[in-house]
Every structure is written in structure tokens, then in C-alpha cells.
Length: 120
Image (cartoon, rainbow, N blue to C red; front, top):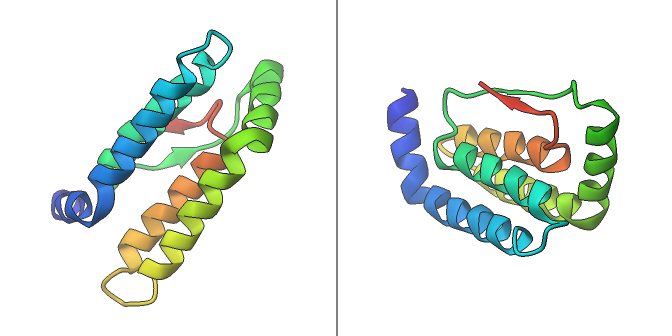
């Protein structure tokens, strides 16, 4: 089921989301200050490309991670989270789209607090 879900996911916008997160990571990595944030975008891009069968574990980010998560949340994390919540809500309007909407809700959670999050 995970493989089929991931293949359908790629055609329903997974590739576009991967490209968007990768582009955001590249833009953030242009400056030295943005490199930690760009690396988190690359982590999320890998997760967005093949999301079914993976889970997110939040926490264990320490004091530095807390500061970076707060900066992330204030500057651009809330925009990413709102975008994924809206897309997930549209997918959940149909029964067939519910699994895909649930994946977007996972991305919204990761879009809020990426530092210290583990994907397994």
C-alpha cells in the first residue's frame, strides 16, 4: 500500500512539492545565515517526495534548536504550515483524497517545528 500511495502521491503533486521545498532550501542556502534553515528544507523535501510509510517524531532539539525553531516559525514556518493545512483540507473533501490530506497534515506539523524532528 505504501508504494502505491507514494506513486500516486508523485502524480498528485508530490513532485511539485519536492521541487518547491528544494528551491526554498537552495534560496535559503545562498547566505551563510540561512544554511541551517535550508538544510531543514532539504530534509522536508526528502520527506515530501516519498511520505507514505514514514512518521515524524518531534522533540529533543535543545536550546539552539528552540531558538532556530522560533526563528523558523516567525519568519516562514507558519506560511508552510498554513499552505499544507489548506491543501490537506481540500484533499480530505473526498474519501479517496483522505490519505493524501493526512500526509499534508504531517507536513504542516513538520513545517512548524523542523529542528530536532526525526523522520523514520
